[in-house]
Structure formats: structure tokens, C-alpha cells
View 1 (tube, rainbow, N blue to C red):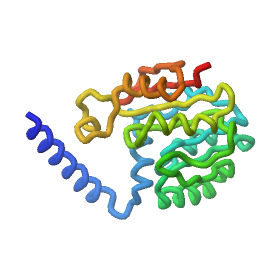
View 2 (view 1 turned 60 degrees about the horizontal axis):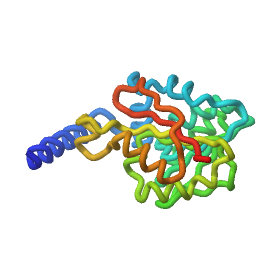
View 3 (view 1 turned 45 degrees about the vertical axis):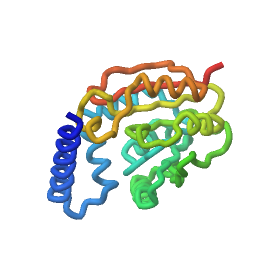
Length: 211
């Protein structure tokens, strides 16, 4: 059974890669990420509403990709707020920087991530938002213990990740069981304050530092 699962996953991945190359042509990976994030089943506007962002807030979009959610967050926090578009891939950061300039979203700043965190002023962030990135992070408990110091008192972390339920993302190892996320975040010093269940393919949990 294990061998069959691997074989099926391999065939599916190959098909997906071939399809993307055929359909996207010269489209950059950052643009592809944005196109996928804009799909109806992402419910992007509803996700942003659920974050309850206010004008003037400072938010880090961890694993920003092509910046789709960075742009939406920037609209909510307004010109008096700030969005840190954080990614480990410089090509994506360059894309976001150009696109933010084109959109006149001067409140977006790009930040190069490291494997163990990213740079921001201590106690400067109202929220860290991360979507479909959690499963990529290494040493997650220690990672979030480290970035906790970047949050203001009462600051929150919003984590969306693919559900561990046998879907395509699960087959290729791009998912995390929501119970594992909650357990690891608790070990990192956070308590879950919201568990939103309106997304079909992803869990959506919001955490705050434990007292």
C-alpha cells in the first residue's frame, strides 16, 4: 500500500508540473502563486475579514510568495499601517516590491527570511499571518518561540495550512494536522483563541501568547 501511494503521488505531481508548464508559459512562479490564491475556494476576502485587522496595524505575512495576501492586508491596515512581506526566496521579494510600487502600496516592506526566523523590531507586530507555509518550517516549536518576541502584547499568529485528510496536498506532504499545529503552538507558548472552519481544504487557527 505504501508503494502504491508513493507511485500515485509521483504521477500526480508530474501531471501537475506538466500542466502548469503548458498553461502558464512565461508566467513567473510568484504570479502562479497569486493566481492560485485568488481562486474562489481560497475565500481570500473572508479570510482577511476573519483577521479583524484595523487601520494602523503592523502585520508580517510569513511566506508571502507572490504577495497576494500582503496586498489585501495592506489595504486593511491602510497607509498608516505596515506590512512586512517575508519570504526566503529573493525572486518573490523582488516581484512583491515591484508590484507594491505599481499598486502604490507604500506600506509594504519586503523582508528576507532565514530558516530560524526573520528580522523585525521587538514587540512591533500586531499579527503574524502565514498561509500554506507551516508544513515547510523546520523546528516549528523553537521557530515560534523565537518570533514570539516580535509580537506586541496581545499580538496574534494566524496559521492556515492544508488539512491532513488525504487530499492532494496531503499526498505530497504539504499538509499538517490541525491538532499537531495546536499542540506545537502550545509548546511554543501560545494558546488557540479561534478555530475557524469555513475553509474546505485548510485549517485556520489563530493563536495568542499564553499568560
